[in-house]
Image (cartoon, rainbow, N blue to C red):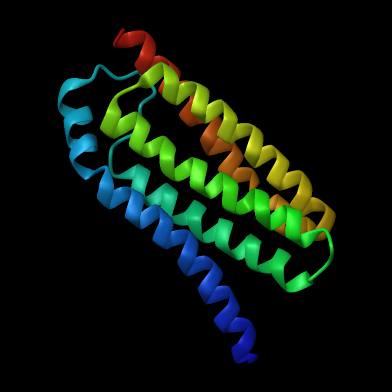
Length: 157
């Protein structure tokens, strides 16, 4: 077993999960308030599903980024720049949606995130197709989150 490779994957996956974990800590009160006071759409999943889904998605993000990083191709740098950018935009969306309650603005922000995810997948594809394909669940979940975000805005105007 190549310990350097294991360490690299651990760092990349751990950093993605850390971003998600910090976001989760910062929005705890906002999520509690959201659950108690906001009208939700019919297809809203149970609360327990969100941290489970996001943990898996963050692990996949970090794993994919590690694969792209390990290739060391010239295309890796722009792909990883978009990766870090989308991770930061993702982090901010949670704060905007749950802590600030700016649902329409959050929806626009989420559309921007969706575009960044598509760009990341496209750039990952140029470097490592497996890394790109592993981001399709993230794109699908973000698309569903867009439906939820828009619906929450409509229901709570």
